[in-house]
Length: 154
Image (cartoon, rainbow, N blue to C red; front, top):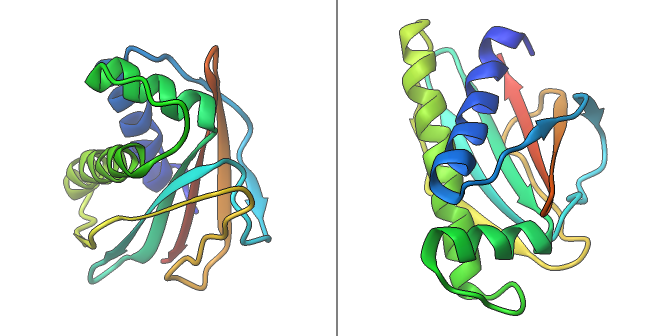
């Protein structure tokens, strides 16, 4: 995966959490990922298909930061991951993918987006739609960690 393609997703993630939830993220080091097990507790997974692109993206939150995002965005303070938090994670996943899609269209990459699927629970797994190499990038904040995972055939 090249930086030209990945950077719009990173920028969109940071922008959405900064503007919508007032949470600043510090980027970690990207790594290859081989296991299907998610690094956090609740994940939004979305597929993308176009003439030049086939892949998927997931955003995984640790419980602590997912609950803080819920509080900051909606003023609600659940004690645990619930259906409302899962809905919020799905919407955030959609916003991030949509933001990156707009930037990538300027570079000539056009694709459609599926409806996000949200999975939660300890040690849940993520099934990406593409068979390419998976990349995971951790982000840290004072409220917990977020993981951006991408897999593309391109």
